[in-house]
Length: 354
Image (cartoon, rainbow, N blue to C red; front, side, top):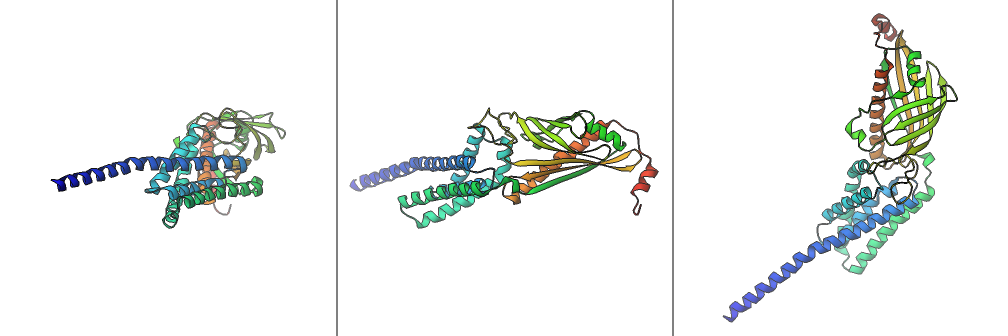
């Protein structure tokens, strides 16, 4: 009888211990994620204050956040790091600091960083037993991330960032003078028939006007989230038209932060101009292929302010290239000259050696 009571008491004690462990585990995970979110918010705010654009120091913040989470996690560091990053991104969206599409585009980059950081922090934890020592290492990681941002902000010069070029061409059944007039002499208005992945937050062109027409003309381009203003740099009727953008008047919608201009309505402070790219020039060239047939070429040059290059360079190139191709198609549809070209003259003009 006594033995049975002893077994019963032992069983009850083990059950209470398991229950306490079960109750403490979620609480510990919550505390770990909370510490990671605090680190993420701190690194984001210091990055916004110290850096000039979205460079390597800011985009490597998830690596430090993941390492801090892994260092503090008693179990499941990768899961805790993923939860932390997702919650931090949600906070950035809800507080109107970042656009939804920007966060979606950044996921393939920030998630692997957080996971690698969590694994590194978990490895360090195995060899560092003291709680104070772990806290000191976590604080050191946070300070290293802030220091990197400060150094990058001090030495970085956005005017020297990499240049990129997107070139497109399309054949239009109209004379060069008519195509040039369609671009420069009257307002260009395009239909909002853009692919869905371009419309969920990126600035889509709507119309462009040149007033007055000529070498001294001013350019006004209307986008889905505001307007851009510039001036003519090249004016050669029937041959070439080029302009550059000087300033923006942006009215970003909630959850659709374009980062192209100042938007005082949302966020902790007014948005900085051109955080992710700077448009250098836009150029149209008209090449006659045959009587009544013109090849319209469009070239956009911009500086990329997003890093790392291996991820954002091809992504930015693809988005701008796709938008430009679509714009040329819409311009061809609005020229209004459906007269078919002379097939014989066109073949002769395009034949090799002519």
